[in-house]
Image 1: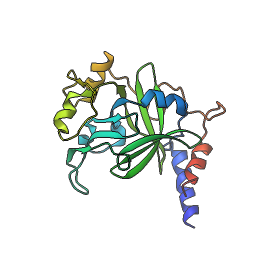
Image 2: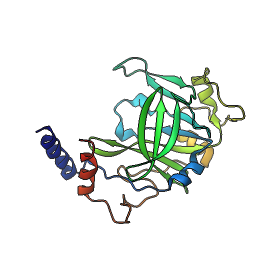
Image 3: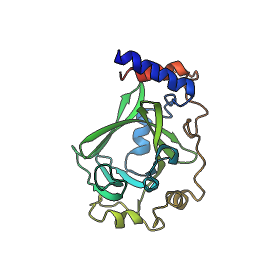
Amino acid sequence: MKKIFNLVAIVGLVISGTAYAKPQNSHSIEEFEKILSGKVFVGKTPLWEISNEAKKLPFVSYLASDGTEFQCSARPVSKNSTTLKYKTFQGHPKWNKWRLTKQFFGSGILLTTNGNDTRSIPVYDEKNNILERWYKRKKGWRRLVVGHLQDTWPAWALEKCPDLVLPKGLKINHDQNTTNYDENYKAVMGKPFPELSQNKPQGLTTPLKADGTEVSSNDVVDDILEDL
């Protein structure tokens, strides 16, 4: 009975247009390995996905080539709190790490932060240097993280996470001294951050299936049913 109820709810979401289709992979696992390894990812949460204005604060993640992840991100100071404070996640082979994995019939990123796993589909727009991570949610697929890649650690992150011990040789970008994400992007790319489509990955005209055909509402339902 529960599954029948969930199916009805899902069909309603698709009809109402609030369910987003699974995004197409922009690169293979091997290509993403070269793109991400040893890079700093400066990201944010798209504004239409959040209710708390404070969550506009950017975060930084260094994806070390040995599979560990060093992260500086704003988190609630307590359960159910809307007040955020930057927190350090030191790279660790068990508790804070990253790896590429084959999931959802394509390339995927498995992140372990403080021992908790999250899985997402990455989409990378090389022209604008924009990396998105799409997550599976009850209403379909959501772009919950978007940002860009760079070779340096932002100066503002040193102030927000002073106890984070960064790998030797990782240089600091002193032109990035504000937590305004758009200014961080502009400091690296020399141009404003482009306007994003709410339900389509940047650089891809429409979500596509592996055979190149457009994803339909039925595909959205099939994907979500896998988790029931």
